[in-house]
Length: 245
Image 1: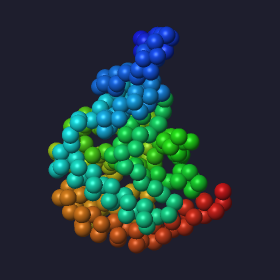
Image 2 (image 1 turned 135 degrees about the vertical axis):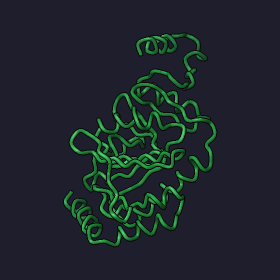
Image 3 (image 1 turned 180 degrees about the vertical axis):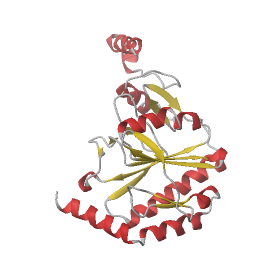
Image 4 (image 1 turned 30 degrees about the vertical axis):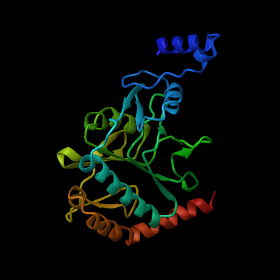
């Protein structure tokens, strides 16, 4: 980190306009501050996805496969979008950079937040970034399983992401972690095979339907969840929190 800082200082101290204007490209394995990561990311528009995890840059491959990532990513986004539509006071986002702490700026496949005016723990900065920990994060993991299940999991746990879902597509497996105290514990499905969020009432997921890429089955379980009394009460509580501010 110190070497990068010295190199940056030297570049801006140069009397050459070309040197002063030059911004190095991002590269896998770079060790950067969050500010320098954002500067290089903004200056490299050809990059589709890059993340800063524990001060180290990780970049997505230039092409993503349909069955292993694109299709699962779309199903997760659709699931969360339908929940947002039924739940005023929450918002979902797709593939957004998140300033979660000074050494980490992940770009998860999806996130679900409670709006700050409704009591949520994150906020949108003046320049348009999410700052703080979203309540729920989802990662679609094919080539990124090792980082999603290790370094990222620790970052999300440490920063208070309340629920963390990892769909390991190549292994046909789904992990849903809930933060209890300072540890993540696996969420257990009910007898009907439905996973039910503890933080977001009505956010139900049929793991079987998801792993089979069954869009209708995913929405059927979710629709049953948002029709329940717990979801109705949750929406009322979000409205009450908003009204009291």
